[in-house]
Image (cartoon, rainbow, N blue to C red):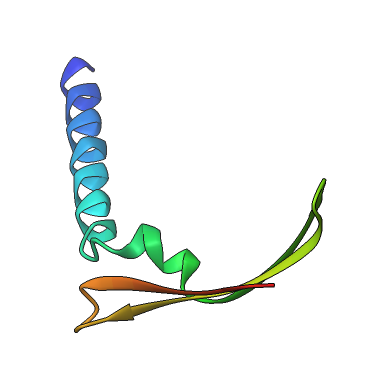
Length: 71
């Protein structure tokens, strides 16, 4: 019984390690969410503002560039 529990735990640990390795194959994966065009508005003491931003990977996908325009 103890051997089957240990074997099951070892297999589960191995599967977790393999799935984690697959997820981290793209080191920029967490930043890909921001990629694209974004628009926002805000309101404060100085009035209403709008902003347009575009997040884009450049130079072979090694850097993220942010283009920003605020009104």
